[in-house]
Image 1 (tube, rainbow, N blue to C red):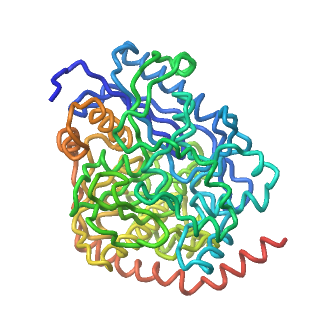
Image 2: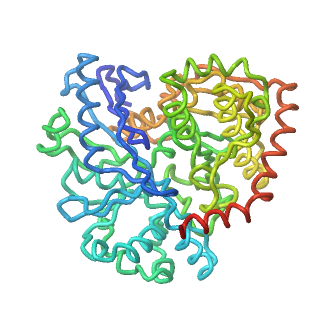
Amino acid sequence: MMNNDQTILMGIDGGTGGIRVGLYDIEGHCLGFSSRSYETKFPKPGYAMQDPNEWWDTMAVSIKDVLNTTGIDKHAISALAFDSTCTSVVFARKDGTPLYPCIIWMDVRAAKEAEELLDKTGEFYSPEWMPPKLAWFKRNERKLYDETEVFCEYQDWITNKMTGKWCMNNNTACNWGYSIYDGFSSKIYEALHIEDAIGRFPSKEVYRVGELVGTLNKEAADHLGLYEGLKIAQGGVDSSIGLLGMGVNRPGRIGMITGSSNLAMALNESPLLNPHGSNNGPDNLIRGYYTDYVGQSASGSILSWYVKNFCEGLSYKQMDELAKDVPIGSNGILLLDYFQGNKHPYHDARTRGMFYGLSLSHKKEDLYRSILEGVAFGSESILDTFREHGVEVKEMNMAGGSARSPLWMQIHADVSDIVINVPEDVNAPNLGCAIACAVMLKIYPDLVTAVDHMVRYKHSYHPDPEAHVRYRKIYELYKSFYPSTKDWMHEHSDVYEKL
C-alpha cells in the first residue's frame, strides 16, 4: 500500500443543483470544499432541462475557488474523479457541441414512450431513462435527432471535455439497457424504433468505477485551472458514488443519498427488486454485487422550491428553527411529494404533488414542516419496498444536503423507526470520487477496502417510540393518498395537457 500523506485527491460532484468540489487525503479527510449552483429550467410540467456548457463553466469556478481558499497548489493534486446525475441525456456533435439542452434525469416527458415500451415488451423502463427519452426526442425533434452524432450522459460529456475522447461508463449505462457482459438490449431499442441510436453511443471504450479513464488535456486544464496530464479515475452515477462515500460496500447495509431527490440503495449478491427493465448489475459498482435501488423523484428540490419562493429570504437553518416547534403532523397539513411524478413504488409520471389540509390559520413553518414529513413518508414507502422483498431495515446511512438538518434526520428516524447514521462528510459523492481515485492510484486494492479506510461517522439519530406511533397513523393516510386520487390525477393531467 502506498504511504504518502501528501497525496491529494479531488472529488467533483455534478449534482442536480450544481457542482461541488472536495479535496481529500488518502484517509478520506476533507481538506477543502467549494460549491456553485447552475440553473435548471422547467418549461412545462414534468420537463427539466440544463445547459451542458454551464456545467463546464461552473466546474471551473468551483475548482479555482477551492484551490484559492485552501492555498493548495494545483500540482499537488494526484488525481480527480467526477460523478454526475444519471440519465441526464446529452445530444451532441462529435466535437462535443450540444445540439439541444440536456434532458436531465427528473424530466418525465417520455411517460407515454415508457408506457408503450412496457406494453410491447413487459419490461419497465422509467420515463427518466435513456431509451424512452430518445424515443420522445426522435418523435418530437426529428431533425435534431438525425443531426445528433453522439447520444450520451452528463458523465460521458464531461469526460470528453476533460480528455478529448468519447467513452462510456459501465455504472451510468445501467439504465440504457446495457450490461458490460451482454451489451445493449436490442429488443428495447427495436420496440421503440430507435435501434439507430445504439451506433451513436460512445461505447467503443467502456470503463468501470475506479479505473483510469484518461488524463486531462491542455485545453481542459487551462479552463479548469489544473495541469495537463492529471490522472482521471472513472466516477459514475452520483447516487452510486455516494453509496461508497456513505460506507455501503457490502450486503446488509442500506444507504440513502439525499439532495434534489432521495435514493435508497443496497448491494446484493443477486438482483432483488426489479431485475427486468434495468440493469442493476452485475458489477456496475462493486464487483460481485448487484445494486438495487428505489427512489423519490423529488425531495430536497421541493424544499428548495418552497424556501426560495415563499420564505422571504430565510435560510434553511432559520426555517428549521421555526419548524421544530410545530407539532407532529404539521398542524393538519399532509404533503404528497410527487412534484415530478412518482418513481417508486408506483412508477407513475402522470401524478403531481399536493398539500392537503390547508386553512387560514396555517403559517409558513407549518408548510415547511409538512414538506420534511411528507418527504420522510415518501422515503418510508420506498423502504417498504425493500422490506417486502425480505430485507430487514433497522439502520440506514444517510448523506447529502438533507443530512445537514438534525430536525429532518430525526423526523426520518421517527417515521421509519430506524437508526439513521450520518457520515462525518455528508458530501458522500465527493468522498466517493476520492475513493475511486485512491483505488485507481493503487493506494487501496479495491473499492471495498478503500471505503473501510476512508469513511467515518459523525452522528446517529435514534427513533422516539412515541413519535413513531403518532407518525404511523399519518403515514397510513399518506399511503392511501395515491390509490384514492390516482384516477383524478390522471384526468387532471389529461385535461391540462390538452388546454
